[in-house]
Every structure is written in structure tokens, then in C-alpha cells.
Image (cartoon, rainbow over all chains, first blue to last red; front, top):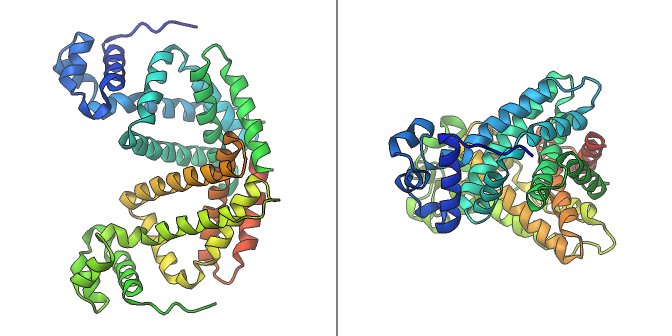
Length: 185
Length: 185
């Protein structure tokens, strides 16, 4: 697995996630994050609008990756196939950020405020994926169910990957998809 | 279908929904809601903590109904069957509130602030249903997928019912469940 060589932005994100885990999201200041990263507050604000954005900046680029993958997914794939394929490909690009992703999930689990924001981001991604599937000619209802199911599968598979980084994300995605199918049929 | 004979609480809710649709959620005050219902602000605050609670008070009792239905669902039903059955039975009790439910959905569609809050309530209901299925002996992952799928089915079927109140909710639930199954297999 490629090692992540963090630049200033990456150092700020890792410092923030470490501090959030040590002391709780609410109690950590931007000054402390910059200090831990060996950078200034000014540098922090060159990269992020606020403390919350440190947490969600990668989610934004993940969404863009998913939509790009969906736009060029194999036309032969059906809706659920295309959605799962796009999330798998975008998800694999997260591999170098394993430590960040692990910290992020741990902070999310104990911070309702961030979990609420994360739900809203997920709903936005679901809506964007539904629209993208619509552009592939998928009926709206099928597209909405496929996008929701694929994201539910990804949430489970990503947690599995964080629990066992040696595991193969595409295999975890397929296993979670099978489990979802069994659960609904 | 039974007519809803609104008490003070119901009159406040219907007045609020009418005003929200006419003028937008953000611009309506508690004083205006009370006035439209022919009641005082004091009566309003006897029933609701604030303007937002008018919108979500029924969601709270819906959640309680769903969990009660799930607790006494036929033990022979599997996870998805029990979850869909519980949402169908709780959903049928909403029939007398058709006008309120229709207004609510229309306001939700144009009010991101309420939609975000609604997402959070849905996530809470999903988590509570997952736990309730766990108490029936369902494995956690199956329970989580079944609860999410059943709620996605209910969201679609409820919108179908609002579009056509003469339709039968249990039949709409079964149709939406078939559509979800087709979308994921």
C-alpha cells in the first residue's frame, strides 16, 4: 500500500484527527491544530474555512471521485452494478489515507454534531448518484434505490476495511452487497 | 377514510402547515400560527416547545408506533418482513392526517433546514429499528440493512400514497419493496 506523505494540508488533517481523538472535537481549537502540525493559524486558514472543514474536506473530493467514476462506468453495468463499482473505485483511492480514515470514523462515532453533518453529506451524495444514474437512462425510482443501497453497502465495507486494512476493498464491497441482498430478499 | 376532527393541537399543526406553504417556513412566526388557528401563543406553547416541533411532533409518535408494532410483529416474519410490516401498520394510522402529511411533504421539499432535521430523525428511527430487530435475534448487519431498506421503501410508498390517497398503503409498500428488490438484484 502506498504511504501517504502528507503536505501541510495533510499534516493539519492528521493533527486535527489526533487531537479530536485525544480531547474530543468540541474542545480542540484551530490554534492547537496548527501548533500540533508545526504550522501557523494563517496556514490553517489558507487550507480550511474552519475546524469542521478539516473533517469534511476529503468527503467533498470523495464525492467528486464517485461521480467521475459513475460517469465513465462500463455502460453494460446495471444501476446497482455501476453504483457499487463507482464507490469501490473511489474507495480504493482512500487507501493511502488509512490512518486519517480510521481516526475520522472513531471521532464520528462519539460526536453527534459531526454525525449529523455526515448524514447530510451522505444524503447529498445519494441524490447526486441518483441523478448520475438517471443520465445513464435508469428510471428514477430504481436509481434512487440503487444509490441508497450502494451507499449502505459502502458504509459497511469501509468500516470492515478500517477494522482490517489488509482486506481487499472490492471483496468487502461484494460481500456487503451479498449481505444486503440476503437481508432484503 | 376517517375524518380527522382536530383538537387545539391539531388545529395548530394544520394552521402552521398552511402558513408554511403560503409564505415559507422561515418567515412564519408562532404568533401568526396561533392567530390562524384562532388560539393564543400561550396555548401554542402548551403544546409545542417551538415552531420546529409543530413539524416533528407527529414524527416522534410515528417512531413510537413503529417500535411498538415491531415489538409485537409475528415471530415467523424475517427481518425485512417484520420491518415492512411495522412501518405499514404504523403508516396506516396516519390516514386521518392526510392533509397534514401532504402539506408536510410539500414544506419539506422546499426547506433544506427541515429536510436536514428529518434526515437525522430517520437515522434515529433506523437505529432504533435495527436494535429492535436485534432483540428478535436478527444478526446486527442483517438488521441494519433490513431497517434501512424498509425505511427507504416506506419513504417511497408514503409519497405514492400522498400522490394518490385512494390507493392502499399496504399494496404501495409491497410494490415499493418489489421495486427495491429489483433495483439491488
